[in-house]
Length: 147
Image (cartoon, rainbow, N blue to C red; front, top):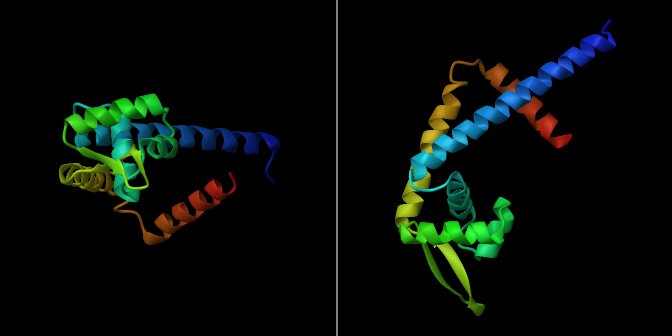
């Protein structure tokens, strides 16, 4: 029979593991950002990765999607344009608005970074039995769905 103290210890251990996962994820994000371009803040990679996944967009839509304020997003977009990672053009529906998109070089760098990120991430589970990996996927899905 499980006691309240056993449950509390399990919940504490869960919290510790979630914190470790978040820390490892942040560290991987930092390395990914540096791989993308060493001269940019990590947030620039989040912008580039979003544009890679969803395509050209207005800077305001990008800011909202990645959870950044418009000013910071605008600054990063300007820096990325100066590095030839992004292009900007007039919005077809509103000539006053701008649409930003990855350049070929920007797309190449995002793809290379995602490949590197995937290799590092999946190296951690490479030797796991399929049943263990399936159990982790199912438990994480259940945990996230319950949020």
